[in-house]
Image (cartoon, rainbow over all chains, first blue to last red; front, top):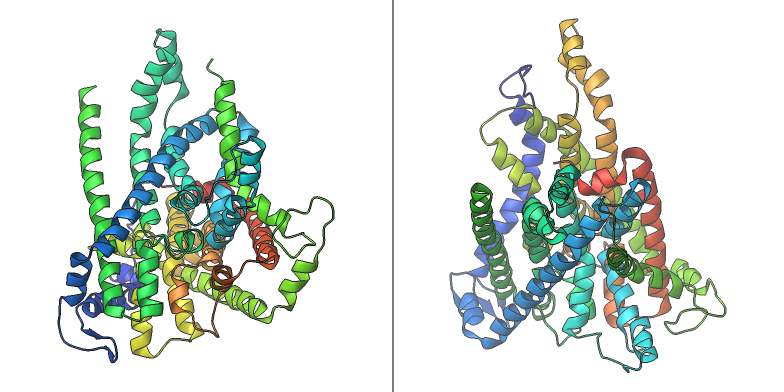
Length: 290
Length: 264
């Protein structure tokens, strides 16, 4: 990339980016700062949000097993979703990349297009499929399994989250597979490497960065998803996102909601950064050795 | 040569069915003549589509969504084009930080942005304002427009611009006559992608809409948490149809796989 020598003035980049910068300062940085302040403010059940500075909201979250349980549930549901997306998305991306010309683009679109359909529509579709009289239970009955309660259980939430998140795993894996020359695989095969060895020694190292970034996106989005647990988890299966929703819009305890939202943001960022550091470290090491 | 094995094809078929199943079922159930959510095996009817068009709240929300998405997508492109030029073509201190900030809505959960903006709106007395709702949508869709603008710029051959400059064209003329037309597919693709993302957005909007400004996905969420009837399937089927049309247009304009996979 050749970067600019025809700059009319050294203030050009500032002038060009000023409108966007101003909007993002006003609508992203300022609200996040205000929310951080809000999480330290006092809340009174009768009088609402008071001024002052208190750690009460954080103490409440840290001191109550009710909140631990919700954070723990959100964590394992997001982790399980990520794991399933890796196990399904990576092979699917590989199969797609080995397909012949017209089919490859067609099926890539089939896998990715649901991304553009509102998540509410997709959640509604899953509630139709997984309901007590839904198609899936109909199939189960055909095979003599009998009805299984899935709607309003973690199963429904995980299934729908996988559906929403799978494209986010397929895209980065697909992108990293594009850089893999199929001739390398063929060379390995012709040198008597087994199919398994080719997968382990050539394909897997190639897609590791894609798997990594896909996992981060999937985990982050799953842990903060609201519509899926809201529509498919029911009232009893609370996750962090639905908890924040309730605190803000039903309980009206905004400082507590703000504290939980910031905790979610921080946990998200920490998981992303540490996971990134660990996996990138080991990836770099392995690439260095071989 | 290593061709796809039957086992892999079976796996692929299962994934394809899995991805399409919820969308297909929604479209089927929308045509039911019954009062319950059932697949119309024997007869089909359009009564639930009629019900959608007669539901004034839903129609109001549909127009809200359409207006917000069109204006927000236009504003996001107007911000993303100059910002994208600054990021792709200029070297300046804070360039990475600016890029990070403008892409941050992809990393900061929409939920967190939603509650943060709710606080801002409450302090400004902006709840119920379509303008502020639209600006909030601009923030979350600008990353999509920006990425396509930057991609369009970095794939652009600069020799035509340099030739025009050396022949005495002004910077403004070069931009208007050469750079902008060459960027146009990226800009249109960015606008469409921004529009779709705004039109579909629910997680942030749920916090910052008020009864007059409720957008369609938020309205659907509210209806779905209370009662579920085939009318929901009909709205959903309409949304799938609208998205499908938008996708075909987008594909013709720019190539959908290019937009979704992105060019990093």
